[in-house]
Amino acid sequence: MSLKINRVTTHPFDGQKPGTSGLRKRVTVFQQPGYTENFVQATFDAVTLNVLRGKKLVIGGDGRFLVPEVVQIIIKMAAANEIGRVIVGTNGILSTPAVSNLVRARKAQGAIILTASHNPGGPEGDFGIKYNVENGGPAPEGVTNLIYECSKKIQSYSIADIPNVDLSKPAEHSFGSGFAVEVVDSVDEYVTCMKSLFDFAALRAYCSDPANKFSMLVDCMHGVTGPYATRIFVNELGNASNSVMNNIPLPDFGGGHPDPNLTYAAALVEKMKNSEHTFGAASDGDGDRNMILGKKGFFVTPSDSVAVIAANFAHIPYFKQSGLKGLARSMPTSAALDRVAAKLNVEFFEVPTGWKFFGNLMDASRLSICGEESFGTGSDHIREKDGIWAMLCWLSIMAATNSSVEDVLIKHWTTFGRNYFSRYDYEEVDSDKANSMVAHLQQFVANPALLVGKQFGRFTVASVDDFAYTDPVDHSVSLHQGIRIIFADGSRIIYRLSGTGSSGATIRVYIDSFETDSAKLTMDAQVALKPLIETALELSKLTEFTGRKEPTVIT
Ligand code: VG1
Ligand code: CO
Image (cartoon, rainbow, N blue to C red):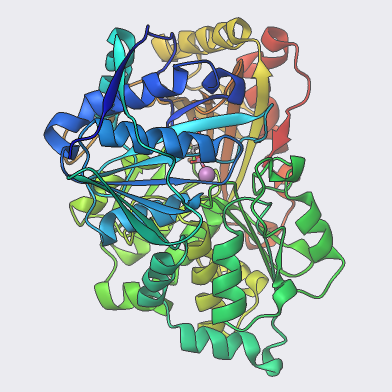
């Protein structure tokens, strides 16, 4: 029996260009008739014929508003576009790392992830659609550019006339002769993966031994991580049931901003300050980001976190067995990881912002552990960053060395020196104003002599450029990835515009400064970086161009 397929006439919508991580817009934009269908069809047009026909596609969302409706639309469009099998999480829910893992575990040819990650949800919030390829990672720019081209030419989309599928429990549903929907438990396969990487018995023993005085608190921020964190940290590792907070995924994330940083996860920080918990962590809406805290809210920057995990790789069974192939970070991430790579004598890569740039290196067996300053940490076990994985790494290091978070970090700084790092975000700036500021900075790129050799306090400008990256594996080139002012001592100021915002422009200013003086290793980062931050604002004339005196978020 063949399915009844409807071909619906449509017209292109402007602006369906995927950004740093998929297409992100306001929910109301996706609710326009045909908008979502167009983008899904453009995605299938870009990849179906040679890749997905008759094959497997994973679909999962972070539980935000609109996910249930869009999952049903994609299932019907997948059927119409001759995809053989859709694998979908219960109620359409899968964390981003769980999707990446399912693609690999089930040898699927692609995935569609419904998330706007750390952006707020609910009817007034954001929605997003992202396509991942068969290695389980975000589609590379070649594919996302093709999706955009298809979205500009689209004239119709195809959708099968089948009823909504019951996603409330794991089951197999067949339609016609060649299409099936397999509903799988959202958490099971991911737990199996984590058990293959970490020593759960040792972690359970560490967490439950009263002599360690260990207690943890994980803030799931009402994002997708709740069921994963509960299963792993409570059920598997035996921590108290109140070790996880805000662990029920909500369509609007409880009205919050599910971004694990000191500003938006302030509730966790407060609870840590007022309790004796020895380990704190938070993750974002779709579960790929993480924040790590020690006792009394002691903050670990993501740039330090990835460096610590890399330096301690031998305490993590997966790396102990497979060895460390290489390390990588996104360009704005602090250079703490560079020093670990040098010491361990492994290959090191600096890539543009966005997880998609790590995939080729992992596929080529040249990269094991990588991270971004934006609270993303991960490894080649999958092809997305992975919040819970990062927490399990820290637990493994604490258990193996019997040390607190603070001790681990201070030992790291003492060994390697410390990179002070901070990022200033100016959200929803008028796009024209942001662009004028970038144009102003581009003058220095075009004519570095304007700055090179100039002295700003103790910093002397060594070079100015606009970061460009040539992928060492497929040799594709990505231009304009951020303006860098690099100083003689390796300190850096970086400016870039966000590619994940849904309205206006977000300016990001990144400051990275290296310190080896053992007397200055435990300063407050804002105090340590003050002169460089002032230089960054002065050189960019940020306040003059944008009218903004203060950043929206400091991390
Ligand atoms: C931001 C971060 C980047 C991260 C991306 C997706 O991008 O800076 O490091 O990979 O978000 O993260 P941008 O272009 O806004 O700076 V997530 O958790 O949204 O998948
Ligand atoms: Co995310």
